[in-house]
Image (cartoon, rainbow, N blue to C red; front, side):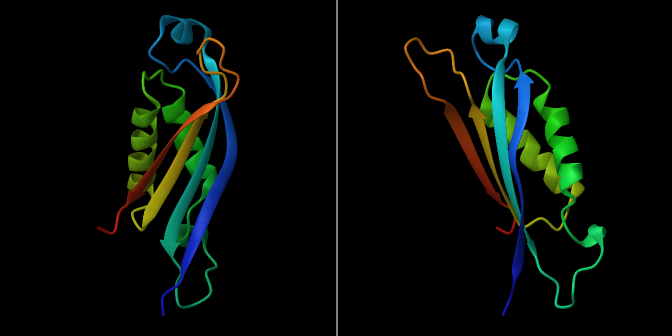
Length: 122
């Protein structure tokens, strides 16, 4: 029987200038990011940070990538996934949700989001 851990970061908040429209590049927007990462659980008790996902490091990686203006949220999600995998080679899968809190859509009062799931085991 195998077991896994899911390490999650919720509601990371960033202000950034992502988007296709000139207004978004000038004014920017507010974003929320959620990440969920899966790793195998060892047979023995896990006691060292090196054997799991360091969520402080995931936050640093996400922030570093997120603060570079990018036209598409999909691009950001894919870049974050690749960078997290590079840092944590034992990562089995990652799911990233990026929410644009105030999209520039006339008459629209909600938020929009992109979700990306990457399975590194296939």
